[in-house]
Image 1 (cartoon, one colour):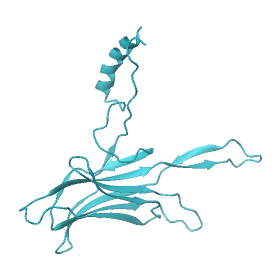
Image 2 (cartoon, one colour; image 1 turned 60 degrees about the vertical axis):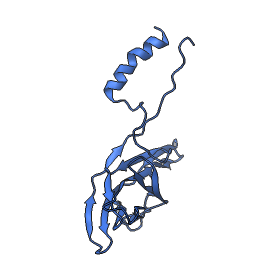
Image 3 (cartoon, one colour; image 1 turned 135 degrees about the vertical axis):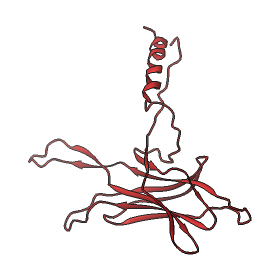
Image 4 (cartoon, helix red, strand yellow; image 1 turned 120 degrees about the vertical axis):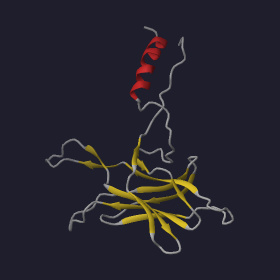
Length: 185
């Protein structure tokens, strides 16, 4: 069977299955392995502030070293352009990190809104488990990730009241394109 025949028979199956080999529809600024979640699009006016919060759900256990919990907090516009970013090297257990965004909407525009979404990227981290036997057994890398709870709130600047709060974030698939060899090679 030729390479062309294989690609033409596999491509429809990949398309029907929603394969992770297709091009991404959403922007993730990091190319490092990990996971990302996003909110839907929300409108923010000049009299409001958006705040993205990320709480590390890992418990504080006295005498036990906590796993590292790095995260990148981002705001994007509705066209996919990065508006603001905060890279947090470590969110300690039971604590939070926040990123605040004030829309650059001109004050002369009546009812003008900035359409934004929030993204939280959590890179994969790994540790090495040398084993507990003596002599040490094979080194086994263990991939760990921290457990976080993100939320997005829209705050009224004049009162400080939260008008909108969401914890409904959706996982963003990480897609990769596979190179296709040219026919006849």
